[in-house]
Image (cartoon, rainbow, N blue to C red; front, side, top):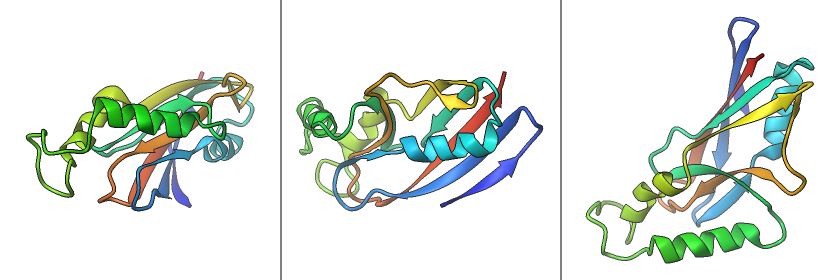
Length: 147
């Protein structure tokens, strides 16, 4: 699914290729993060950074599977309507809002890793938030920095 770039023992990174499809979506990356940490952390404490190098996507910690992911997309529609009000006008109708998304849902998250395991709350998942229907292929960089 991705490539590893081993660096000095304290830092390791992997790039995931994620197909987000042609509709607005929230993609759960938690299992990918956990798999990366099994390989990279080696039971150590540290930090996991999740970064989406795109101008129209973000990273969120949110409960998934109980409707919250759909609620997030609905809230984003209210905050950032897909209409012609946006000055940024290339792409599909309302695409300018996709370029404002990272100001609300940032393109990164840094999370604690304890004993090689991601420390999330009971209902938290690490998710890619993608409202850009014009770009179905995304990359996500996972980086582990050992403590």
